[in-house]
Image (cartoon, rainbow, N blue to C red; front, side):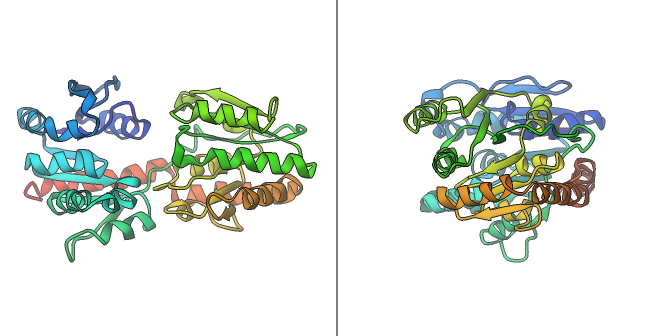
Length: 355
Protein backbone atom coordinates (compact mmCIF):
# COMPACT_ATOMS: atom_id res chain seq x y z
CA UNK A 1 0.00 0.00 0.00
CA UNK A 2 1.26 3.47 -0.86
CA UNK A 3 0.77 6.54 1.31
CA UNK A 4 1.74 10.01 0.13
CA UNK A 5 2.35 12.67 2.77
CA UNK A 6 2.08 16.37 2.04
CA UNK A 7 4.28 17.68 4.84
CA UNK A 8 7.56 19.35 5.79
CA UNK A 9 10.08 16.51 5.59
CA UNK A 10 12.61 17.91 8.13
CA UNK A 11 9.95 18.30 10.84
CA UNK A 12 10.44 15.68 13.56
CA UNK A 13 6.70 15.03 13.85
CA UNK A 14 6.53 14.30 10.12
CA UNK A 15 9.54 12.02 10.34
CA UNK A 16 8.11 9.97 13.19
CA UNK A 17 4.82 9.30 11.42
CA UNK A 18 6.53 8.48 8.14
CA UNK A 19 9.11 6.19 9.74
CA UNK A 20 6.39 4.39 11.69
CA UNK A 21 4.43 3.53 8.56
CA UNK A 22 7.58 2.63 6.65
CA UNK A 23 8.30 0.08 9.38
CA UNK A 24 4.69 -1.09 9.13
CA UNK A 25 5.31 -1.97 5.48
CA UNK A 26 3.82 1.01 3.65
CA UNK A 27 5.44 2.47 0.54
CA UNK A 28 5.82 6.03 1.83
CA UNK A 29 6.38 9.18 -0.24
CA UNK A 30 6.66 12.73 1.11
CA UNK A 31 5.99 15.83 -0.97
CA UNK A 32 7.73 18.65 0.87
CA UNK A 33 8.58 22.32 0.36
CA UNK A 34 11.64 21.80 2.57
CA UNK A 35 14.40 19.33 1.66
CA UNK A 36 15.34 16.39 3.86
CA UNK A 37 15.89 12.66 3.78
CA UNK A 38 13.74 10.20 5.71
CA UNK A 39 15.06 6.63 5.95
CA UNK A 40 12.92 4.19 3.99
CA UNK A 41 10.77 6.87 2.35
CA UNK A 42 11.04 8.80 -0.91
CA UNK A 43 11.05 12.58 -0.44
CA UNK A 44 9.97 14.74 -3.38
CA UNK A 45 11.31 18.24 -2.79
CA UNK A 46 9.25 21.03 -4.36
CA UNK A 47 11.84 23.69 -5.02
CA UNK A 48 11.77 27.08 -6.69
CA UNK A 49 10.28 30.50 -5.98
CA UNK A 50 11.47 30.47 -2.35
CA UNK A 51 11.37 34.28 -2.37
CA UNK A 52 7.56 34.05 -2.55
CA UNK A 53 7.43 32.63 0.97
CA UNK A 54 4.22 30.79 1.77
CA UNK A 55 2.62 32.10 -1.42
CA UNK A 56 4.65 29.55 -3.34
CA UNK A 57 2.40 26.80 -1.98
CA UNK A 58 -0.35 28.22 -4.18
CA UNK A 59 1.97 28.93 -7.10
CA UNK A 60 3.13 25.30 -7.08
CA UNK A 61 -0.36 23.83 -6.52
CA UNK A 62 -0.68 22.46 -10.06
CA UNK A 63 2.79 20.89 -9.85
CA UNK A 64 1.97 19.26 -6.51
CA UNK A 65 -1.37 17.98 -7.78
CA UNK A 66 0.27 16.42 -10.83
CA UNK A 67 2.89 14.73 -8.65
CA UNK A 68 0.23 13.30 -6.34
CA UNK A 69 -1.71 11.87 -9.27
CA UNK A 70 1.50 10.45 -10.79
CA UNK A 71 2.28 8.62 -7.54
CA UNK A 72 -1.25 7.09 -7.43
CA UNK A 73 -1.46 6.77 -3.64
CA UNK A 74 -3.82 4.46 -1.82
CA UNK A 75 -4.02 7.22 0.81
CA UNK A 76 -3.08 10.91 0.92
CA UNK A 77 -2.20 12.38 4.33
CA UNK A 78 -1.65 16.13 4.77
CA UNK A 79 0.15 17.27 7.91
CA UNK A 80 -0.73 20.92 8.66
CA UNK A 81 -3.93 22.38 7.40
CA UNK A 82 -3.73 25.74 5.66
CA UNK A 83 -0.67 24.82 3.57
CA UNK A 84 -0.47 21.13 2.82
CA UNK A 85 -4.09 20.45 3.74
CA UNK A 86 -5.24 23.03 1.19
CA UNK A 87 -3.01 21.48 -1.49
CA UNK A 88 -4.45 18.05 -0.67
CA UNK A 89 -7.95 19.41 -1.13
CA UNK A 90 -7.03 20.99 -4.47
CA UNK A 91 -5.57 17.69 -5.72
CA UNK A 92 -8.95 16.00 -5.40
CA UNK A 93 -7.27 12.76 -4.29
CA UNK A 94 -9.31 10.27 -2.28
CA UNK A 95 -9.12 8.89 0.33
CA UNK A 96 -7.43 11.68 2.24
CA UNK A 97 -6.66 12.69 5.81
CA UNK A 98 -5.84 16.18 7.09
CA UNK A 99 -4.11 16.52 10.46
CA UNK A 100 -4.23 19.83 12.33
CA UNK A 101 -1.32 20.49 14.66
CA UNK A 102 -1.76 23.91 16.26
CA UNK A 103 -1.44 27.39 14.82
CA UNK A 104 -2.94 26.15 11.54
CA UNK A 105 -6.32 26.03 13.33
CA UNK A 106 -5.80 28.25 16.39
CA UNK A 107 -4.37 31.29 14.60
CA UNK A 108 -4.51 31.00 10.81
CA UNK A 109 -8.33 31.30 10.46
CA UNK A 110 -8.18 34.57 12.40
CA UNK A 111 -5.62 36.24 10.13
CA UNK A 112 -8.00 37.19 7.31
CA UNK A 113 -11.20 36.12 5.52
CA UNK A 114 -8.96 34.38 2.96
CA UNK A 115 -7.25 32.30 5.64
CA UNK A 116 -10.64 31.40 7.12
CA UNK A 117 -11.83 30.27 3.69
CA UNK A 118 -8.65 28.22 3.12
CA UNK A 119 -9.18 26.52 6.48
CA UNK A 120 -12.78 25.60 5.80
CA UNK A 121 -12.05 24.49 2.23
CA UNK A 122 -9.31 22.13 3.40
CA UNK A 123 -11.45 20.69 6.19
CA UNK A 124 -14.53 20.22 4.02
CA UNK A 125 -12.58 18.33 1.34
CA UNK A 126 -10.64 16.00 3.66
CA UNK A 127 -12.06 12.52 4.01
CA UNK A 128 -11.03 12.48 7.68
CA UNK A 129 -9.60 15.06 10.06
CA UNK A 130 -7.38 14.42 13.08
CA UNK A 131 -6.22 16.62 15.96
CA UNK A 132 -3.64 15.90 18.63
CA UNK A 133 -5.78 16.88 21.62
CA UNK A 134 -9.31 17.66 22.80
CA UNK A 135 -8.87 21.43 22.88
CA UNK A 136 -7.46 21.42 19.36
CA UNK A 137 -10.32 19.19 18.19
CA UNK A 138 -12.88 21.59 19.67
CA UNK A 139 -11.25 24.52 17.86
CA UNK A 140 -11.28 22.53 14.62
CA UNK A 141 -14.98 21.68 14.92
CA UNK A 142 -15.81 25.39 14.77
CA UNK A 143 -14.69 25.40 11.13
CA UNK A 144 -15.92 21.94 10.10
CA UNK A 145 -19.05 21.16 8.08
CA UNK A 146 -21.94 20.32 10.40
CA UNK A 147 -21.89 16.72 11.56
CA UNK A 148 -18.36 15.96 10.35
CA UNK A 149 -16.24 14.51 13.19
CA UNK A 150 -12.66 15.13 14.27
CA UNK A 151 -10.63 12.15 15.46
CA UNK A 152 -8.34 12.83 18.43
CA UNK A 153 -5.04 11.04 17.83
CA UNK A 154 -2.36 12.33 20.18
CA UNK A 155 1.27 12.60 19.23
CA UNK A 156 2.83 10.50 21.91
CA UNK A 157 6.14 9.52 23.46
CA UNK A 158 8.26 6.40 23.13
CA UNK A 159 8.49 5.56 26.82
CA UNK A 160 11.40 3.18 26.30
CA UNK A 161 13.52 6.02 24.89
CA UNK A 162 12.22 8.65 27.31
CA UNK A 163 13.10 6.70 30.45
CA UNK A 164 14.42 8.79 33.36
CA UNK A 165 17.31 7.81 35.55
CA UNK A 166 18.13 9.02 39.08
CA UNK A 167 18.81 12.76 39.18
CA UNK A 168 21.91 14.03 40.86
CA UNK A 169 21.37 16.83 43.35
CA UNK A 170 23.05 19.92 41.95
CA UNK A 171 23.15 23.49 43.21
CA UNK A 172 21.79 25.64 41.85
CA UNK A 173 18.91 23.70 40.28
CA UNK A 174 18.54 23.74 36.50
CA UNK A 175 15.41 24.85 34.68
CA UNK A 176 14.87 25.05 30.96
CA UNK A 177 13.46 23.51 27.82
CA UNK A 178 14.13 21.79 24.53
CA UNK A 179 12.33 23.75 21.84
CA UNK A 180 12.59 25.82 18.71
CA UNK A 181 13.70 29.32 19.68
CA UNK A 182 10.91 31.25 18.00
CA UNK A 183 8.77 34.17 19.20
CA UNK A 184 5.67 32.15 20.16
CA UNK A 185 7.73 30.04 22.58
CA UNK A 186 7.97 33.03 24.93
CA UNK A 187 11.47 32.41 26.25
CA UNK A 188 12.07 36.11 26.83
CA UNK A 189 9.57 35.79 29.68
CA UNK A 190 11.60 32.94 31.16
CA UNK A 191 14.77 35.06 31.05
CA UNK A 192 12.96 37.89 32.83
CA UNK A 193 11.62 35.41 35.40
CA UNK A 194 15.15 34.19 36.10
CA UNK A 195 16.18 37.81 36.64
CA UNK A 196 13.36 38.24 39.15
CA UNK A 197 14.43 35.07 40.95
CA UNK A 198 18.03 36.29 41.10
CA UNK A 199 16.91 39.58 42.59
CA UNK A 200 14.95 37.64 45.22
CA UNK A 201 18.03 35.61 46.10
CA UNK A 202 16.87 32.40 44.41
CA UNK A 203 19.59 31.17 42.09
CA UNK A 204 18.81 28.83 39.17
CA UNK A 205 20.66 27.80 36.05
CA UNK A 206 18.84 27.72 32.72
CA UNK A 207 19.41 25.48 29.70
CA UNK A 208 17.70 26.35 26.42
CA UNK A 209 18.38 23.60 23.89
CA UNK A 210 17.34 24.43 20.36
CA UNK A 211 17.80 26.96 17.63
CA UNK A 212 15.61 29.33 15.67
CA UNK A 213 14.92 32.91 14.66
CA UNK A 214 14.80 34.22 18.24
CA UNK A 215 18.17 32.90 19.35
CA UNK A 216 20.17 36.09 18.73
CA UNK A 217 17.60 38.34 20.39
CA UNK A 218 17.41 35.99 23.38
CA UNK A 219 21.20 36.00 23.73
CA UNK A 220 21.18 39.81 23.64
CA UNK A 221 18.44 39.95 26.24
CA UNK A 222 20.35 37.55 28.52
CA UNK A 223 23.37 39.85 28.28
CA UNK A 224 21.26 42.96 28.97
CA UNK A 225 19.75 41.27 32.04
CA UNK A 226 23.25 40.34 33.26
CA UNK A 227 22.50 36.62 33.21
CA UNK A 228 26.03 35.65 32.15
CA UNK A 229 26.85 32.22 33.51
CA UNK A 230 23.23 31.50 34.36
CA UNK A 231 21.88 30.69 30.86
CA UNK A 232 23.27 28.04 28.52
CA UNK A 233 22.12 28.28 24.89
CA UNK A 234 22.91 24.69 24.01
CA UNK A 235 22.01 24.86 20.30
CA UNK A 236 20.19 22.38 18.11
CA UNK A 237 19.68 18.92 19.60
CA UNK A 238 18.89 15.78 17.59
CA UNK A 239 15.64 14.18 18.73
CA UNK A 240 17.44 11.03 19.85
CA UNK A 241 19.50 13.19 22.23
CA UNK A 242 16.54 14.98 23.82
CA UNK A 243 16.17 12.51 26.74
CA UNK A 244 19.77 13.19 27.74
CA UNK A 245 19.14 16.95 27.82
CA UNK A 246 15.96 16.51 29.85
CA UNK A 247 17.84 14.32 32.33
CA UNK A 248 19.99 17.38 33.14
CA UNK A 249 16.96 19.50 34.11
CA UNK A 250 15.12 19.74 37.43
CA UNK A 251 12.14 21.77 36.17
CA UNK A 252 10.84 22.00 32.61
CA UNK A 253 9.53 25.44 31.62
CA UNK A 254 7.20 26.08 28.68
CA UNK A 255 6.34 29.82 28.62
CA UNK A 256 4.64 29.73 25.21
CA UNK A 257 2.23 32.43 24.10
CA UNK A 258 0.81 30.02 21.47
CA UNK A 259 1.01 26.23 21.45
CA UNK A 260 -1.22 23.82 19.60
CA UNK A 261 -0.41 20.69 21.58
CA UNK A 262 2.91 20.76 23.41
CA UNK A 263 4.61 17.46 22.69
CA UNK A 264 7.74 18.71 24.47
CA UNK A 265 5.70 18.86 27.68
CA UNK A 266 4.73 15.19 27.52
CA UNK A 267 8.33 14.26 26.69
CA UNK A 268 9.37 16.16 29.83
CA UNK A 269 6.66 14.48 31.90
CA UNK A 270 7.82 11.10 30.62
CA UNK A 271 11.23 12.00 32.09
CA UNK A 272 9.56 12.68 35.46
CA UNK A 273 10.05 16.43 35.27
CA UNK A 274 7.60 18.85 36.90
CA UNK A 275 6.43 21.45 34.40
CA UNK A 276 5.73 25.16 34.57
CA UNK A 277 3.79 26.21 31.49
CA UNK A 278 1.51 28.88 30.08
CA UNK A 279 -2.21 28.32 30.29
CA UNK A 280 -2.83 28.73 26.55
CA UNK A 281 -4.33 26.78 23.65
CA UNK A 282 -3.62 23.04 23.87
CA UNK A 283 -1.22 23.06 26.83
CA UNK A 284 -3.91 22.18 29.43
CA UNK A 285 -4.38 18.93 27.47
CA UNK A 286 -0.85 17.86 28.41
CA UNK A 287 -0.12 19.65 31.71
CA UNK A 288 -2.51 19.04 34.61
CA UNK A 289 -2.41 22.12 36.81
CA UNK A 290 -1.47 21.24 40.38
CA UNK A 291 -0.86 17.59 39.50
CA UNK A 292 1.84 17.25 36.82
CA UNK A 293 2.86 20.90 36.87
CA UNK A 294 1.74 24.50 37.26
CA UNK A 295 -0.12 26.56 34.66
CA UNK A 296 0.42 30.32 34.70
CA UNK A 297 -0.89 33.22 32.61
CA UNK A 298 1.13 33.75 29.42
CA UNK A 299 3.63 36.60 29.11
CA UNK A 300 3.74 37.15 32.90
CA UNK A 301 7.34 36.77 34.13
CA UNK A 302 6.37 37.33 37.77
CA UNK A 303 3.84 34.48 37.71
CA UNK A 304 6.42 32.30 35.98
CA UNK A 305 9.01 33.16 38.62
CA UNK A 306 6.58 32.39 41.47
CA UNK A 307 5.78 28.92 40.07
CA UNK A 308 9.43 28.09 39.42
CA UNK A 309 10.46 29.28 42.89
CA UNK A 310 7.84 27.12 44.55
CA UNK A 311 9.22 24.02 42.81
CA UNK A 312 12.84 24.97 43.43
CA UNK A 313 12.19 25.27 47.17
CA UNK A 314 10.10 22.07 47.46
CA UNK A 315 11.90 18.86 46.38
CA UNK A 316 8.98 16.70 47.51
CA UNK A 317 6.61 18.62 45.23
CA UNK A 318 9.03 18.27 42.33
CA UNK A 319 9.17 14.52 42.85
CA UNK A 320 5.39 14.15 43.24
CA UNK A 321 4.63 16.13 40.09
CA UNK A 322 7.31 14.24 38.18
CA UNK A 323 5.86 10.87 39.21
CA UNK A 324 2.33 12.03 38.36
CA UNK A 325 3.54 13.25 34.97
CA UNK A 326 5.13 9.91 34.08
CA UNK A 327 1.92 8.08 35.05
CA UNK A 328 -0.19 10.55 33.05
CA UNK A 329 1.88 9.94 29.92
CA UNK A 330 1.80 6.16 30.41
CA UNK A 331 -2.00 6.31 30.52
CA UNK A 332 -2.62 8.73 27.68
CA UNK A 333 0.37 9.42 25.46
CA UNK A 334 2.23 6.17 24.87
CA UNK A 335 3.47 6.43 21.28
CA UNK A 336 2.64 2.84 20.37
CA UNK A 337 -0.99 3.27 21.50
CA UNK A 338 -1.37 6.57 19.62
CA UNK A 339 0.21 5.08 16.47
CA UNK A 340 -2.24 2.17 16.66
CA UNK A 341 -5.11 4.68 16.49
CA UNK A 342 -3.63 6.17 13.31
CA UNK A 343 -3.14 2.69 11.86
CA UNK A 344 -6.82 1.96 12.45
CA UNK A 345 -7.77 5.18 10.68
CA UNK A 346 -5.53 4.35 7.72
CA UNK A 347 -7.14 0.90 7.40
CA UNK A 348 -10.62 2.43 7.57
CA UNK A 349 -9.85 5.05 4.93
CA UNK A 350 -8.26 2.58 2.51
CA UNK A 351 -11.24 0.23 2.85
CA UNK A 352 -13.53 3.20 1.98
CA UNK A 353 -11.64 4.74 -0.95
CA UNK A 354 -14.31 7.36 -1.75
CA UNK A 355 -13.90 8.97 1.67
